[in-house]
Length: 255
Image (cartoon, rainbow, N blue to C red; front, side, top):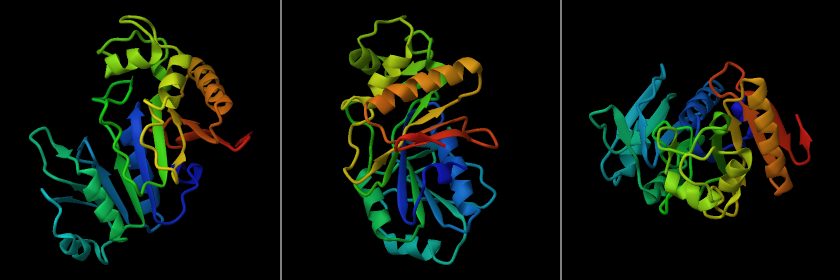
């Protein structure tokens, strides 16, 4: 279970960033927590498609000023709540500002809040733009997600989002193939996915889409880079599968 791999405690706020399975991870995590009787709020700071949970309620407000109304709607109701501003024509929910997420967390009405901190347009991977990722100040866990199937793909917009930022961080040029070390650079850079991480938050990379023998080899190599850089927790898996976690690294050992 993803929730077990993240070792979540009560009242956590988990933010996923990066690309290669963020939404799948959030949705899987929401279901896991909900099925244990927890009240879960899903919030995006970008845009997400409306999830399709059997027991969910979508709450849309343009300014989120009437927080008492939100408290009243959530009180005593056992559902997965999806919070956003508006529903756009493409069935995407537009996201909330960071200060709005902070206010909602301050209400203490959810057992867990799950936040999508940046957009990737369904591409294999990306580097954050100047205003990304959006990680609220109360975040307790940051999960940078990387699809390991991005290794070996040529650097162009067909496969990747924000390729100028990727090129700037890695030194790669257009049409060059992305390597495992490139992924490590983007994850570990202060202008990459170490950016905006609150001091109290645990930083737990999720190396996703590990299915083939080559995927496993690449995932192991990426994990080695991260461990050598001092990363204390790593998850390796395939989020869409029934058993989404293959391996978990915690402070010096694999589980």
